[in-house]
Amino acid sequence: MTHFLHTADWQIGRQYGQFETDDAALLAEARFDVVARIAALAAERRVDAVLVAGDVFDTQGVSDRSIRRLFAAMTAYAGPWVMIAGNHDAALADSVWSRAAQLDCIPANVHVPTRIGVVDLADINLAVLAAPLTQRHTYDDVTQAFDTLESEPGRVRVGLAHGSVSGRLPDTIDATNPIAPDRAERARLDYLALGDWHGCLSIDSRTWYAGTPEQDRFRGNEPGYVLDVRIDAPGATPVVERVAIGKYRWSAWTETISLPSDAQALAQRLSALRGEDVLRLDVEGHVNMETWDALQRAMDQAAAQVRALLPDVSGLRLEPDQADLAELGASGYVGEVAAQLQALQADGEQAAVAAEALRLLLRFQRESATGAAK
Image (tube, rainbow, N blue to C red):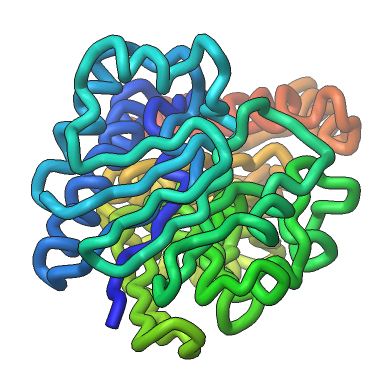
């Protein structure tokens, strides 16, 4: 039996510019941490090899230190690794891979083919047909070469490639780096290990995307896994196990608030979040001042307990009710200003500023009324 791990899209060096500096640094660090967990898993399960299907690095310009740290993170597993270049780290003449070679930091047990060919691992009876990308975008199917690549008789044949399976992925019409959906059958592959799609996905019983092992975007396509693959013998159907390996859970919520009970329900959901959560929260609707303040407190509390919270309340209109205006004594000129600001919230360009101005005005009035009562 041949037993290996299939992983891809590590994206080492990825930047998270939309987050606060501290959060961005920890999310970037998580990408090194998950590689170390993959290496530990490989050692624990005593697999024969680990196959990495491209985009090991997020850019060609990662630092030398990051390159060294990546290979240091892999040391827990001393067996063979086979990793190829993807579209983010294509094997150009001058690339992150050529720098890694110059730095002499690629261990002897790590195979990094820079051209299409067969990596023959005779000790484990495995032939890896590797198709590293040598440019960021191509409209040719680089795996077509697998059809004519020969391997030693009796070897388990596994393809390793990076691209889009034609007609089988969402949002990939006219996608670059195409791969024929029946490539495994055409090339007599026992398994085709793919990268590029960041979610864990089975194209057929022999063709899988592992997805990124550490989620890195707000898309619910099942990232955060590594695949444990067992093939009894050449021609046997692979047994594929999805193993959860990621640390952070990324979620995107869109909430509409019309009643105080809506805000209370959202506050309850937010309170259930934990330190491994990364949340983008879009809130729309309309609320009075009391509900606005309660919602803001809930979001502030959630921001303190999750890894990162990206709130957007630009679609939430502040509509003071009669109780607000009566309590705040917003009559006369102040009342007119409050009404004008409330109306301006309907203007897409001025909505956010108008809502903030109205909130500050009402808060100022409340504080003034409280101070006068003392």
